[in-house]
Image 1 (spheres, rainbow, N blue to C red):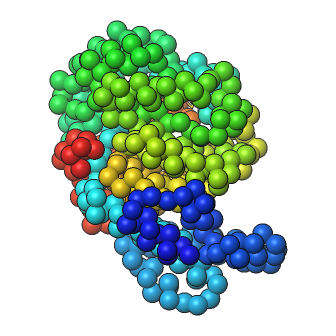
Image 2: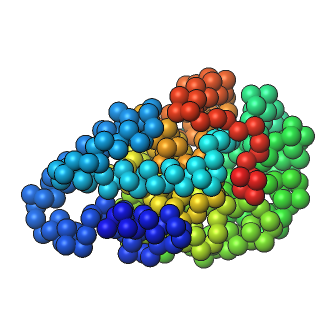
Image 3: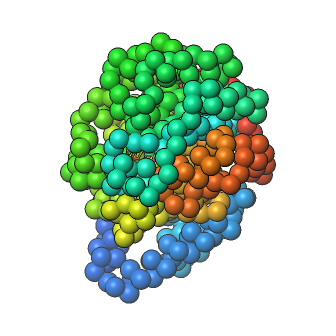
Length: 397
Ligand code: 5AD
Ligand code: SF4
Ligand code: FES
């Protein structure tokens, strides 16, 4: 069943919602799915084997995923489930290689302000988190970080912040146009703005914009993003498209109340809007938010959503997200071998890294831009991939 679905996806890059749900479940057939729901013992075994699969994924992270092949021959139920998991990742890796090649595109991430006027229930930067020490970098500090990134051979910087009205369109225009002088592509990730603001940034030289839809389940969105409007978020994506940005979106995996069906809808949504970039990350509960006692997402489910996204959108940019590495020490390398082709190392300096605490356990909070650059280069080389010297625009992949 899984193999048939994967074959179809590899050939047509189309899947139905039901097929996506099957891949997310990892179940082999409807019958087996029923048994899983009905039989406690079976479920327990399968849960164990999910852990087993994760463990093996870690062990083999630095090798090619084809290291799994020998295991796929075993008839035992543990291993057949493992096969189902791995064949999805192997398939996504194959499609990634065929359509966007072996180059990994680095984007230097500048986290320039942790002020946010919004109050998303899942996020550590939400305005009601009074425990967080807030910071803002000055225009010149931001420009200096970008200059340093270009000296470290980054070809793109991502300017990210909470929704912080301090940075007016004029301030952003100045920052963007100065950074463009360093021959960098500029990606913005600063939230919901008006068409006119997006237009002003674009005119100043911004190339790409990231704004995750977070979830396509409108009821869930309403509960988790009080005061925000899902339709407006969609309008932002449409406005950005009209302005000829490269448009990135994405979702959180493991939000409380989120279902596999809803994750399948998210993936189909990415396809429908013809996104240029998709970032998928596990939701990681933060102690100073209303969702502190919820379970959060798993590395493996986020990886599956990412891998299926690659199957359906073969030629887009997909980052191995930092949140994945927070849940698995080899998370980014595993993601790079399961469909991803982008990494976004942090190029922020000093305390800001720690204070940009969207979720706990963020990696690299005590590191420097140089250290992260060297570290990621070594990691990428260890899996026989190369670092791109280009801007990595989707049209040129
Ligand atoms: N865990 C993981 N990711 C989160 N984000 C916000 N809160 C969390 C969390 N607790 C993600 C959102 C947002 C991006 C900048 O960070 O998807 O778009
Ligand atoms: Fe602000 Fe974004 Fe966090 Fe929501 S997810 S509180 S908009 S930084
Ligand atoms: Fe920061 Fe590895 S990427 S230390």
